[in-house]
Length: 203
Image (tube, rainbow, N blue to C red):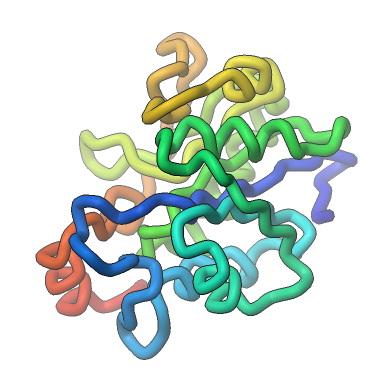
């Protein structure tokens, strides 16, 4: 696991959803700019982090998504309760952390334009703050993803249920923002979003 002065930060990639807004297909298995959508964020993460830093939560279409991830060195956990919402995926990820983890970076899998530069910038800021604050990317006036949360939030995240994400549990006084690129606010939830994404050059 990649460490900075014995600091360990786990990256939890959320890839369990059923893509309800997208339609009858699993958006993560859609071809996009030459490879499957799930493979874009996988490759970006592996540019910056070691495979042991990553934990991927699958659920809907789990075997297919696991095959598309196609990396035996990355730990993948099947969330059998994925239909109950994103909170269950975050909870199972936190439950499976090692005891020496100081923070978690929670990353939606449907954001292909998140850059390796922004991932590095966010983690660096979290470490500069002694792993005590919540670090959020910001593009202009909009908060984005991924979010990094300190160990003090693990108990709260472990108890998440249903369609309740990590953002709803953050105390405003704990937030520090980092100016990032547009990829931190661009997710692909619908077919029209995919069409728009195809017109954007990946940075």
